[in-house]
Image (cartoon, rainbow, N blue to C red; front, side, top):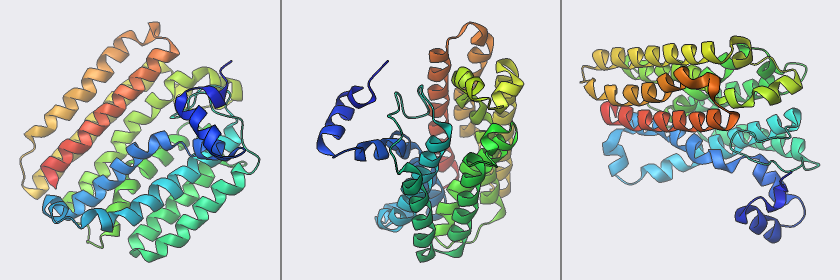
Length: 304
């Protein structure tokens, strides 16, 4: 079994530099996901201020506080509290060979979540409300007796709204700009888009989830139906983006590019899923994340 403290050069350096289990606390915040979360959060900010706003140069300073609150305090705290109650032994999302849970990880995760809510008062009320909703969803998702991540369908709904729509909305709200119908549809489109992505993140964890007795959406549906649902949700998401473009009166042809990327990932996956190993399903998940990143960029080109 891999020693979590010597898993790679980064781990060896971290445990050498930081005393005791301090580096284990950092790893359970899963910083490997922070660039992805930061990009999707910043998406909402750029959508609000537009490319001209970005070009003025002040956007990074203005966006820094909401990004840190959302990515480090909310997302980091959420993933840490998830680790506390999951007690995974195998690889988990954005953390291979997870280290043993440090003694005060629950205390640290709750402190981060609460501190983020307190810091949110420095930002517009829309951001504060979005944070409070996701704070509550984080507790409901991971913590017994609720632990909705183990309730198939409920885990899906929490994630499609929390990550899919509320995350970019929070950054939009941080600008104080009112939300119009067309851009509301853009943000709403990321709800079904994440609904398509979410079961893909569970396919390589079937054995871990079965061992814990968690009835995840992907386990209930099975691999084939999970992939079919993912395809349907992605198509719905791009239908909403097309509607948004029509409302705003802007060309939407470029949206065909990310849609093609999604289908290039999902259709071969559906065709070959029965013969794939967990490692291949995990690689499929990361290819889907790449399609998500391409979608973010193209949607900003079209709408910002």
